[in-house]
Amino acid sequence: MGESTQVGLNAGDEDYTECAVCHYFCHLGGLVCKCNPTRAACFEHAEHICECPLTKRTLFYRFTLQQVP
Ligand SMILES: [Zn+2]
Ligand SMILES: [Zn+2]
Image (cartoon, rainbow, N blue to C red; front, side):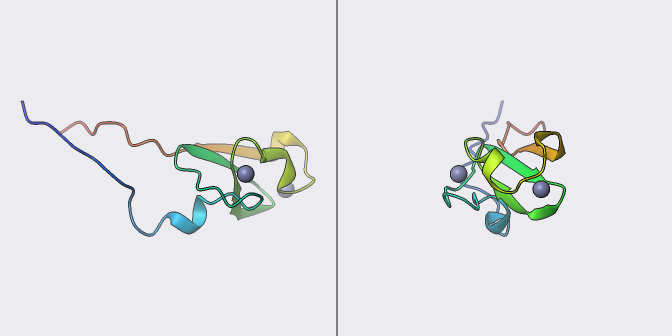
């Protein structure tokens, strides 16, 4: 019943999801640190965005799962 095709990402979120280290677009998700919530990093560079212990990092995910109607 009804197919949902979701292509692309929501506009306006881009700046939050670019890795501050490699500038790769973290379209699947990444990490932010509590010391600077506007600075995101991809999973690979999570430990390079700042010098806080890893326990301060927060994972976020942004996969677009199929929305339930
Ligand atoms: Zn990166
Ligand atoms: Zn930090």
